[in-house]
Length: 221
Image: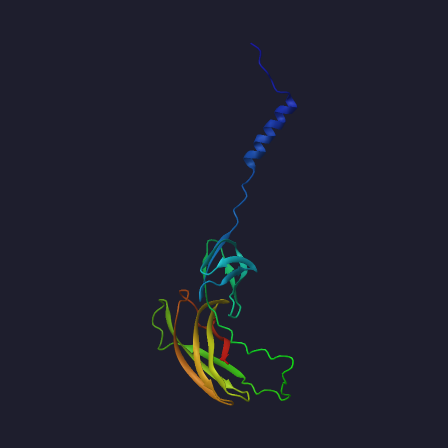
């Protein structure tokens, strides 16, 4: 009975192919996480690094680990964005409270006379800080906080129905917010407000790393 033998060069190539296939290491899977985006009101467009990902509430899966930017847009509301850092297996929740744009005034026709004098306008400046309602004795969340808000109208006209958003940032990411109603501010006037906020924070967080910023100041026309 005859037996077939492979030529020596072909046999060597076959052996080398088997060895190289057995020694090659598999390509490691890419480290990813996910982002859940919610907004008030819902139905806003969601963008991750300027790429559209549906409307809120939305969950973006397989987000590569690293730094990204989440943006939210909705007609009639101010655009909103926040940086987010993704790590392997993380599931970040991004809450956003959108602030409505003030109603626009009617456009005057080209034949309408426009007064030369500059219209008096309010100028609103808002600042403040956060504190605990009493000494914090527990690390459980959500954590009750008090926001102290100071608002000044340094302009030459009264401001009606002033609101501001007190946004809390921890590690560069907004973790909670609260709308502060400041009422009417007369020209040269000042008002102070204390409001209570319930904020969900990471366990063991450091107080100095929690920052409140007063943004999205709106004056009703």
